[in-house]
Length: 242
Length: 221
Image (cartoon, rainbow over all chains, first blue to last red):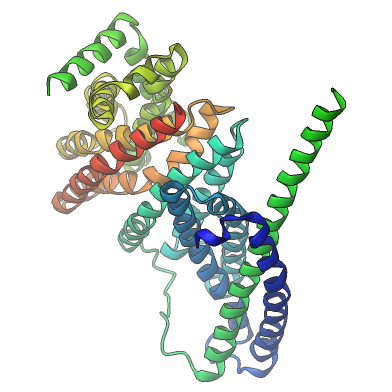
C-alpha cells in the first residue's frame, strides 16, 4: 500500500483503472436498470412502484459503505500518515452524502404511494437522515480551516468518532421508533426476495459500487493535479521575483 | 490524581472568577423553555405531553452553547500548548476540564429542571426520573461536546460548525433521556432507559477523552 504513496505512481495506476471501472459501471447499471424497470415483475402488493427499490436500496448501501470507507481511510491517514488516504477520505464525503440524499429522496418518493405521505419517522429513514448530517458536518469541518492539512486531520478524527457512533445511533433510533410506532404505517418487512428481483438489485449494487470507485479515482486524481498546479503557480511567482 | 484535582481546581476557579457564565447557561435554559408555551399554546395537556422532550432538548442546547468556553480561551492565550506538553496524560487533564464544565453548566441545569417541569405542568411522578436522566445524560453531553469543541479550535465560524458536528452525535442521549421520562409518566418502569443512559455515559467516557486529546494534539501541532 505504501507503494502508492507516490502520487505519480498512483496517477498512472488510476489512469489505467478508470476506463475499466467506468465501462463496468455503464454496463452494470444499464443491464440492471433494464432488468429492474422493464423485465422484472411488478410486486403483487406494491405494483409498479416497487421499482423504486432498484435505486433506493443500492443508494442506501452506498451511503453506509462510503461512510465506512471514509472512516477506514481516515484511520489509515491518522496512523500511517499516508498522503493519499487523506485525499481519499475527503473525496469520498460528497459522494457518500449524495448517495445518502438519493436514498432519502427515493425513499420519500416511494413513501408517498405506499404510506400516503412523503415522510414518516421510520427508523431507517431517520437513521439515514442523521447519517446525512454526519456527512455534512464532516464536509463543513474539512473546509473550515485555512490550512488544508489541519482540516484533513480534524475531519479524520470526526469521521472515526462518527463511525463508532453510527451503530449506536441506529440502535437508539430503532428503539425510539418501536416505542412511537405510528399505527397507520405497517412495514411488510423484507420477505424472501424473488430471483427476478434479486438479480437486477445485485447488479445495481455492484454498478453503484464501481461508479463510486470511478468517481473516487477521478476526484483523487484531480486533487493531486490541483495541488501540482498550486505548486507550479507558487514556483512561477517565486521565480518572477528573482 | 493530584494533577486531576489541581486542574479541576484551576478550571473551577477560572469559571467562578469570570462570574456569570454558568448563570447565563441556566438563564438560556429557562428562557428557551418558557418560549414554548408561547409557541404551542398554554393548554396544560399540550404542555404536559411535550414537557419531557422540551426540557431535554433545551438542556442539550444549553449545554452545547457553553462548549466554546471549554478550550477556546486556553487555545487563544497559549496555555493549551503548555497543557499538551505537560508531563501528565492529556486525557487526565481533559477529564478535569470536562468535569469542571459539567459542574459549572450541567449541575445548574439539574437544579433548574424541576422548577421548569412545574411550569410545563409535568406530572410529579416524572420528577425523580427527570433528575436521574439529566444526572446520567448531561455528563455524556459534556464528553461528546468536548470532542467537537477541540476539533473546531482555529476553524472559521467555529460556533455554527460545532453544532453541526455534535448535534447528530447527541441523538442517542436525547432519545433515552426523554424516553425515560415518558416511560415513567406513562407508568412503565424507566430502569431500562436509565441503564442504557448509564451505558452511553460509560462508553462516552473513554471515547470522548481519547478523541478530545487526539484533537487537541493536532490543534496545537
